[in-house]
Length: 129
Image (cartoon, rainbow, N blue to C red; front, side):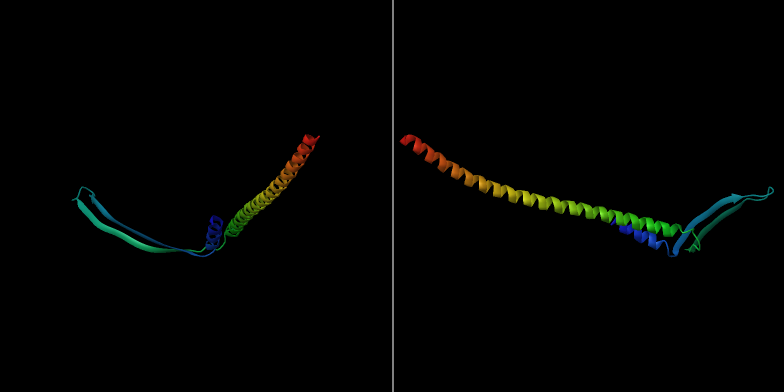
């Protein structure tokens, strides 16, 4: 998501920028010139303005920044795909390993049954001489 936001920001840099600026204040003071009487100043100061910025030429900086942002986004997506593939592979492997273990357990149980029967038969044969 950060990569997508960076690409959106780089694309937005292609457009003009509009800013609103405002200020307010108070001018307070006293002044005297040539030994004359003192004069007091107490005036409000305020202003508002709009700033429109539209670069005509930037040496293709914005285009290169957009390409860099797109490249980072693609790299992050590829990394995410790699992690997803690894997780899927590990889940499939765990499932197969579990299935093999169940088959081995079933085969071992069958072999144990056969071995027990063979033991019983051998023991019976031994006892009969």
